[in-house]
Length: 191
Image (cartoon, rainbow, N blue to C red; front, side, top):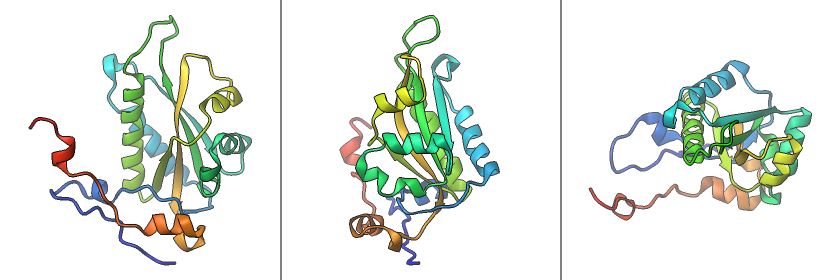
């Protein structure tokens, strides 16, 4: 296995777990460590939300289950090339209106915070996470019988880092490409 240093070249000191976090596509096709999965989900549970509404739901689909196959079936063809090796695929869902029909305009933002907390906890515990927008939300919603007020937003691959050498060439190159971000001067409007 080829080891590539994926530590972010930051301009300022940040937490090690944030600097080391990245979104690999190479996963070891093994069962999930249930304790580590529970810790990641617990971190999501304790993330902040507007009015403490906690408008997030997660379909946790483990390798080898029918639920896992249903999530894989909703993925875009590109993501189907690599994501099935993950230990778990998680369908992240925003509760866009409550049971009484009142809209929650911050539901997607709050779900994003919950997923960020899940991601950082997983990485701190030695797991890797890759979030995907390349999936058919309507198909996923139908597959899991979600009410209209629940909107699938992303699919999260979670598991153990695998060997990038096992990926198709195009994916292998992306896995080893230098990490880059826009400069702070490009994303900060007023400081």
